[in-house]
Every structure is written in C-alpha cells, then in structure tokens.
Image (cartoon, rainbow, N blue to C red; front, side, top):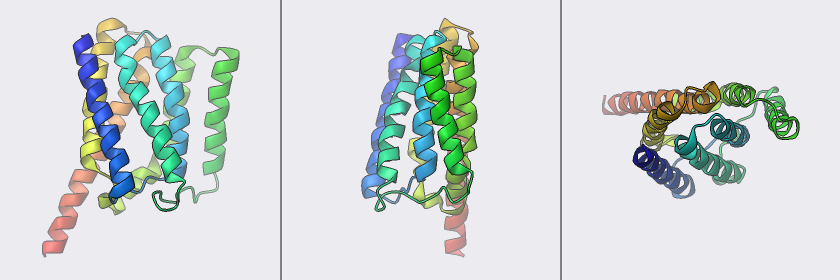
Length: 199
C-alpha cells in the first residue's frame, strides 16, 4: 500500500506543479478568498488525517497544503488571481477558519472535530471556484483537478487499508468528491463552449 500512497502523492505533486504553471503562465485565475481559506482548511484537514491514523494515505493531503499555500499567495497578486470575496460574509468565513485552526492547536481539539471543521470551512468557500468553472471553464485546468481527484482516491484506498477512524479519511474523501465534481463541470462546460463556438 505504500507504493499506492507514493503514486498518489506523485500524481498530486505533478498536478500541483501544473496548476502553479497554469497560474503563472496560462489562463488559470484562482479565487483569492477561496484559496486563502482553503490553505487554512488544508492544514487542519491534513493534520486531522495524520492524527486519525491515515499514515502514508495523508501524503496527498500534505501536498494539497503546499499547493493551496502557494496558490493563495499567487492569488493575491493582481496579475495572477481573481478577486472573489465580493460577498460580505467571506471575511468572516476566513476568520472562523483561522480561529478553528488556532483552537485545534492551542486547545488540542479532537481530530474528528478538526476534520469536520476543515471540510465545512472548505465547502463554505467552494462556490466561487464552482462558479468560475461553470461560467469561465477556461480559467481552470481540468487535467489538474482530475489528477488531484485520482490522487485523493488512491489515498483513500491506502487510508482504508490502515484505519476506519473518521478523522483519518473524512477530509481526503471530501477532496476526492469535490475535485471530481469540479473536473466533471469543467469537462462538460468546455465541451458546451466549443459546441457553441462551432455553431
């Protein structure tokens, strides 16, 4: 199973590099608030996975931490990021996510609580990227999202071979589902856009 874990980690790493490349040199425009909150939630989610006994299955989540931190930084550079965060509750979501992470570190909250908070926080700011995928699918690379979905699925195989602990698999399961959803939307919307251009 360690081999599967490393394969998933390699795929996630390659997709992370590709997404960063597309942000720097392509048409990808990451949403600022979304990726900033995702960076905080990723730390919480990966930490809870390790505490829950995910072992090598958490390597993919660790790669996701690195990706989200780098993309969050780039997203705040006007040349690379999309503004996002136009709704008045977005800053509150960010501070709640940050407070939850600090509470987990300071007060040693159960890993199960950390996993739930990470997923709920992640979901709360998922909509700007979903909207971007729907309205401007050219701004998100489906290959990167699809590869991440595959990597998360491989990680789940490893995690379930090691533990059934909720904290160990919950965040990674969420990643697999969310990334699959974005991938399918991007593929479908790009095909629709191409058809409309032809007609």
